[in-house]
Length: 238
Image (cartoon, rainbow, N blue to C red; front, side, top):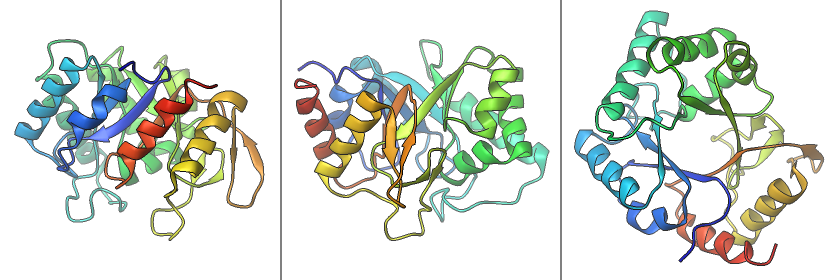
């Protein structure tokens, strides 16, 4: 089976052990580094599978909050936040036989670093100081993208195939009942609009221009494999 001819990434190593089924379709994966989910053995297992399937490996650091799966903001001192991000990435990096492909923050850390100036700076301080040359997955048009580009960090703009948007750089909050797209056709429609027309339909029914380099599905979505199979099928017709 040929892979989907687009840069599709999925969050993995979060305890579901569905990676063997997902990886044949993927370009990249984001491996949980033990803060919101996973542990060293889980990371080793998923790294091995990713290497077998030629899937690019990225680190998926989070606030240290397993209770809430890293999806609630945490107040942390700047030094403590720097240290936890750096330590998480280093744990994964030490397992790799090849250079780390990218870093993508998880959950609340993803959104806070995308939109909050100081949080963005801390994540970029980690990358520029300790992981120079590693690219960053983040929301297009975000504070983090702007800072990253000004500091010479390569940015891979990310769009989400299984999430509703409020604006082109803001997703519907996870606490909202309509945060996720749950129907395969809706996910496929969003994929087509993003890849073929560079736009997304927001919750207020407005088309918003959005140019992305990578397209995310969440590995803990119960229909993630169905979504990947459907996207694989339609890429033969577009």
